Amino acid sequence: MGKGSNVQKAQAARERNQKKMGKSLEERQAATAKARLDATAYMCKICRQTFMVNAKLSLLYLHVTAKHDDKKDSPVECFDSLADFDPADPDGKNKAKSAAAAGPVKPKKSAKKKDDDLASLLDAGLTVSKKKGKK
Image (cartoon, helix red, strand yellow):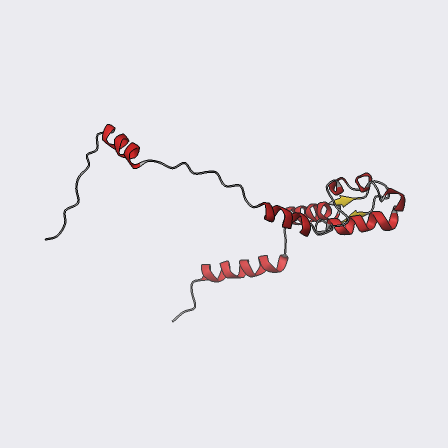
């Protein structure tokens, strides 16, 4: 048996060559733009130092305390994202515990009477039938 037609072989060769060539110009430009945005996700307003997008708030606060000790009381002057940051609870565990202790708010269920429910069914035109039992 043959290994396929020349069209299939040519298509397979084109795919192999495409993989060797790598990314196109547009793909490379998009990747560089994304990398540039990710690299400058957090930028200190004072010293213009940049932090990656995956930097935690505790790392940003550490930068404020280490580099800008006089701004320790107001870290928002360096990073806007530190507005709700609590240095005593850097990972937000205590905040999560207090939210869990409060519990989710459940709406109250109103008790329905069977008579009202039955009356509404009868008003809708449905009939009540008795179940037939086996003898």
